[in-house]
Length: 180
Image (cartoon, rainbow, N blue to C red; front, side, top):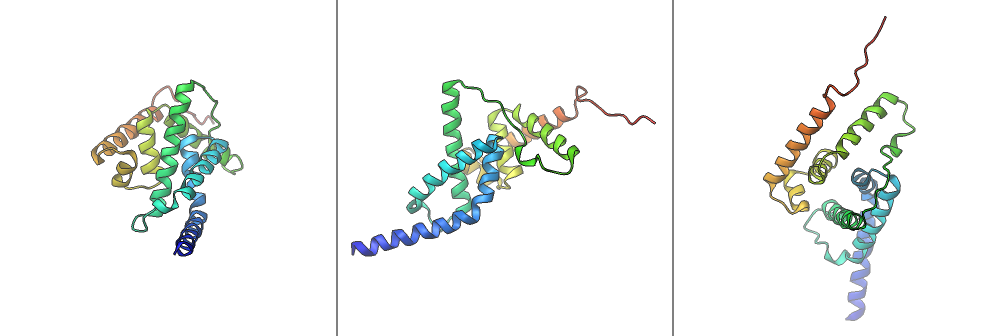
């Protein structure tokens, strides 16, 4: 009987590894949106995948595997952020390492500005914005992931959007004028 249980665990681990392979690009994008640095995103994904493989038996096939993995990534990110806050270490942020090779410098500039402004948002608003606007989670999924009511997610998202719009439309922002 024990050999049958070992075979079932091996089968589950193989299934989880196959599903992880399909989710890897999305996980990396999600981690980059949270950390803003490619090297930190890779570390976050690695730490999270180690946890996912060790806890493969906890995944219930009824739920979304995508959601389960991102919940692990997000919780790992929160734990790392709390540890960093306790240490009090500031690390310079390389905002757009992923977009350096793009052919549109104006797009890179605009994206860099939006990400810089996102960094000025409070952490709770930033996280909701990443989950809903970038990762495409529903309000209910984001609420479950953040362990807050759906109304709180909506409120934080609305405040984040208003703050970003105000910052991006502020008169302090330089305006270019075409001169003939």
